[in-house]
Image (cartoon, rainbow, N blue to C red; front, side, top):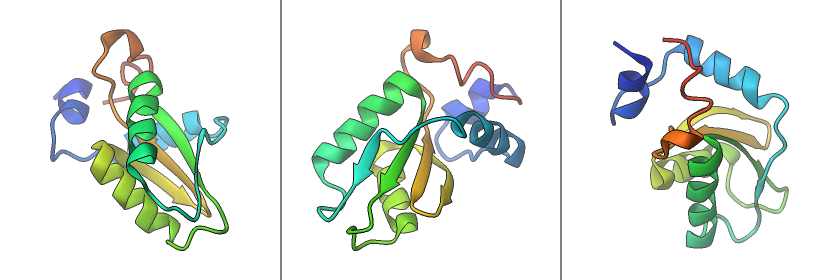
Amino acid sequence: MSGQDILGKEGQSMTGKQKSFLRGLAHNLQPIIQIGKNLVTTTVVDTVVKALEARELIKVSVLQNCLAEPKEVAAVLAEHAEAEVIQVIGRTIILYKRSNNKENREISNRIPK
């Protein structure tokens, strides 16, 4: 099974090795989206979808004034953006989604099988 098969089909989850690789890549990333007291709005979801399409791997920060738990926010974002939650640590969420644009697939082409 190729990496594209694992990451391109709905319903197939990533292996621990693949998630570990992505966590390593995300270590140096800064959160580019912040979730606050307004929780997850359609604007936030649209921003997440666009960021994932362009970058494939993003960090999201859940602010202290957010009433929801970070794991709940991660689940909602992943569901609406059709992304994979790589990790939730503290108030930081790491999300991954393989880009539909072949030119933006830098990360997905490097993920181990």
